[in-house]
Image (tube, rainbow, N blue to C red; front, side, top):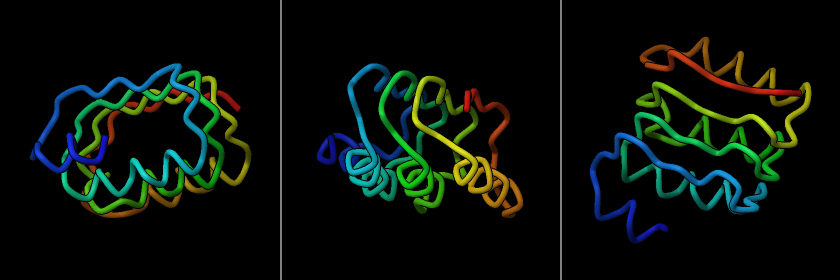
Length: 101
């Protein structure tokens, strides 16, 4: 995925739902987000936990996200706190996040 993200400056929709992604895969994806701005990302029904969520939200271009679909992952209280810290940052465009804990 990294070559794809490096070759694009922006994607309007990126669907990686039900791909068995875990925290390590999310960390690698966050590296790709340093090269590409994604407006809507669907990561539902994976195995991403608190650490993977943190890697994604604090990548350099995560502020461009408008929608993050994240239901069906392994996020707990630490992940919720990470989301709160992310929302307190300036210059973010997030309008919608779907999450189950």
